[in-house]
Image (cartoon, rainbow, N blue to C red; front, side):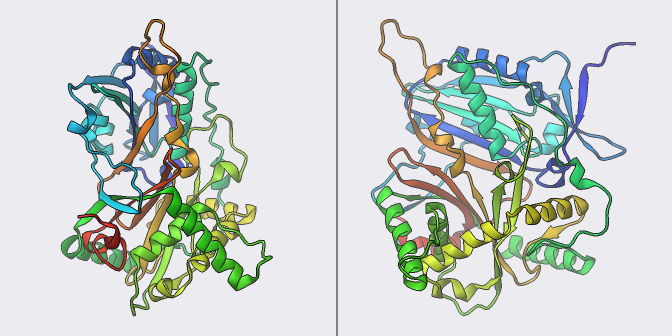
Length: 456
C-alpha cells in the first residue's frame, strides 16, 4: 500500500465557524528592489518549518469538515512566484501617498501585481492542486511589491503578521520558527452543554429573520450596489488634533482629573463614523462590530497561526445620535465596549455561543432596518514597519541599507463584496494614519462627511 501523500489536519472549530469563503491579501510597496532568490530560499525554509502554509484546502464530502491537506514532503512549487516589469512602479500602480491634510482617494487594488498566479476565490482553491498560501515578488526599476495571499480559514491578520515576521527573521539570518502546535485550543469551548446565552448584540436568526436579511441584501444589491473601496489618510497633525479634541470632550464632561482615556484608534474611528453618518433624522438602530484580539485575552499556544479574534458589538444607538454626540463621547462609547465585552467571562460566553451556533446564520444588528458598520484594526500589527532590508540585492562594498515601505496595501476577496467596512489600517512612517473603507459612492461623496475631503 502506497504511503499517504498528505497528512490531514482538521481546521479549527473557530477557524471553520466564520469567514470560510474569504481570502486575505496583503501587500507592501517598497522603495528599493529586493532579491527574489533570497526570498525564495527564506520561503523554502519557512514552509519546511510550517508546512501547513502549503497545505491544500479541502472539505470532506460526507462530513463537510474543512481540512488542511499537508504534503508529506514540502515543496515550494506553486507557493512562490516572481515577476519583473520594466519602468517605475507608478507607471503601473498609482498607490495613495501621504498628504498634508485629510484626504480621501479611490483605492487601486492591482491583484494582478500582488498575486497574479493565485486562485481568485476559495471555490477555486478547493478544486485546484494549489497551496493555500502564496508569496509573490514583483520587481520594477525603482522598487518592489511584495504580496501575501492567505485564506481566512487558515488565519486572520495576526496570523499574517506571524508569517511575515517569521519570514523576515529567516531573511536576516535568524533561525526558522518553532513548529506549530496543531492542537485546537478552542475545542474545549465546543463541548456539548446547555444553551449558551447570546453575547450582547448577537442573535442566531430565525427563518423569518433570515428571509428578511435576504430580502434586504437583494434590495441593496439591486438599488444601492455602487460600493467603492477608498483610502482615507490622516496626517500626523490631524491625528494629534482629533485625539486631543476627543480627550478634551471627555475632560469637559467628566472633569479635568478624570482617568478616562481613549486611544488614537478610538478617536480616528469615532471621526470616521461621524463622517459616514452625518446629521439625519433617522431613528434606525446602529451597531458597530469591532474585532478584538484574543491573543491578548486568553492563553494560546506559541507560536499560534490561526484565527483568534472576538467580535464585540457596541450598544445600540439611533443613527441620528452620532452627529449630536461629541467626538469624545463617541470614542468613549467604543472604548467602553471593548473593555466591557473583553472580560474573561464575556470572552468565554462569546466563544461558546459562537461555536454552539456555528452552523446557523448569525447577525449583530436589526435584520430589517438596522444600520451597521464592521471595523477591523490592523494598526496594532505594525505591518508597515516590517523590515525587508535583509532581502535587498547584495552590492559589493555597499554600506548597510534599509528598505522603506511607501504604502501598505490590503484587500479581501469573497463572493459577496465588502460593505459598511472600516479598516484602521496602518501608521505611516511620517506619523500619519491610514484608514480604508467600503461604502456606497453616495456616502463617499456626501459633502457633509467624507466628500469634504475629496480633492477634484
